[in-house]
Image (cartoon, rainbow, N blue to C red; front, side, top):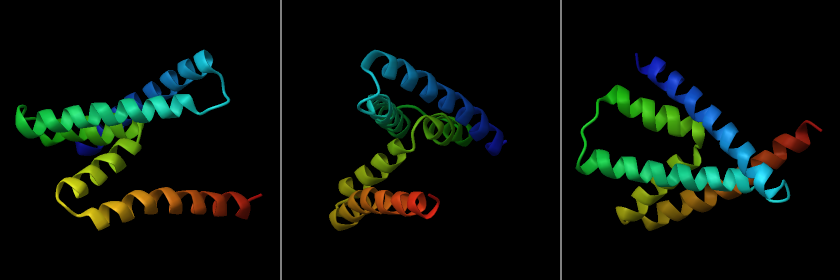
Length: 121
């Protein structure tokens, strides 16, 4: 049941990302990745709002949590998970770990993306 919840949510989130990104690109043009930028910001906002609601006011089942957080938001943007995990590290006072996570994922992501790209071209 968990995998089905994730798969259905992931399909919804991925389609939503594709549609919204396309809409934003049609509005703003392709010179800056504004579609991805907007998707990441919206995803972070929704992730934060749902995380706040489910930690303080709203009780949801593990399946519904997987559907929303891992499925829909994971399909929409994994950046929201990265931002939330970084936020938790900062909130818990683990500033070094937060800095390593934030800088490390960005820098290593760019380096390994370039390595993969150049290894195949």
